[in-house]
Length: 447
Ligand SMILES: Nc1nc2c(ncn2[C@@H]2O[C@H](COP(=O)(O)OP(=O)(O)O)[C@@H](O)[C@H]2O)c(=O)[nH]1
Ligand SMILES: [Mg+2]
Image 1 (cartoon, rainbow, N blue to C red):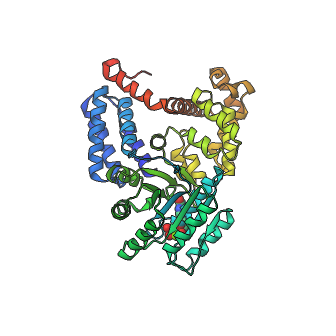
Image 2: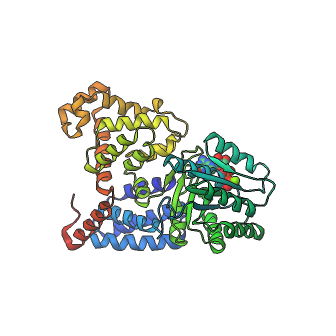
Image 3: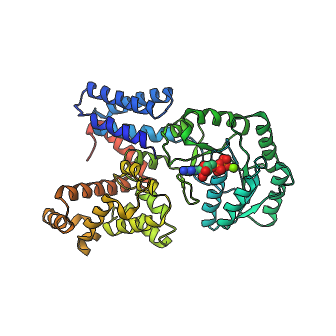
């Protein structure tokens, strides 16, 4: 996920042996520019972003930390288009969701993922097969819904508008919470498709029109989204195939050029591979700070809910410890998409790229981490702050690792826990703003 961007950001940042002068800043900005363009971010967006990063860095006093902070703030802002986040229920059920997009973009898969996501929230969901263009389309949806115990409405004898209307009646009578309409896509946008979609839209008057965009398609995805938006007034975008070799630029483009909020991201082919899009989390991952909170949420269904809540609260209080870490690791194994989850772990986004086909037990890095944690005493696992030098030495010996390896992991762990705490919850952004304000008053960035 975002691999290309992350890698080039890192190289941009690492290249900077930042002296507090304009020349270093210019070098850093140049490197950043290259990596953004390479990641398929639109040149106008790049220009704006560089300008703001430069301005904010200077306002803070030039340095690596201020550059990173400015970059992080500006990326978060760019990714935050006004509008809703995640799923929003209508005050008058059923909440009606119309899915649209090009053929092969992931509409059907995403429809089922979304239905499954809502089902886990104990909502009653009815999926509707309005793609009557492709012969196998209804069959595909039927199989997916059956496999995941999701109610499906279909009638291959009727036209999509009539199917939509009848499905809505069924949903109202059956007291469904949510109605999701999967529709037909085409390889290229055409008039007939748009008219059919508009008729379905008129038939059900949806609360949300979700556009499913394939994140592998770069600037093309933005152009198609723009055309759909004109005709259909999209209320949110779901980026599919975010797990692939996506260059990442699409996310920035959709939010900043089209001003449509990104609502979810699809991070794999499995039904559970759907995540709420949270801008500052994505940026955190981009900058490789890890996303412990996201991880806790994703694994919430596998560890029980009480435990997940406790974990989130621990992160917020800065009490995330090695036992929690191990537990997360164990529950990750039960989940489908390893790569996307590894990307959420502190300091491991670059590793995620290499992990396509590796399983957790055989990963060298994870094996080392586990060895390290199992060489700790019970008290040390519960309280990472106990680890002084002599204890670290003992752990390194016990785990058969070098002390450098132990130090590196501990440092990553500490940073991630700190960042997760700092920016978790609503207060996070406030903290960041305060930090900026303090810095602007010439007090420098507090450490
Ligand atoms: N890796 C990955 N594959 C996806 C994702 N979403 C959809 N796909 C795959 O993309 C292909 C097309 O998806 P489909 O839902 O049939 O697209 P539709 O034509 O828009 O309905 C299928 O092979 C899906 O498995 C995703 O988030 N990640
Ligand atoms: Mg389909």
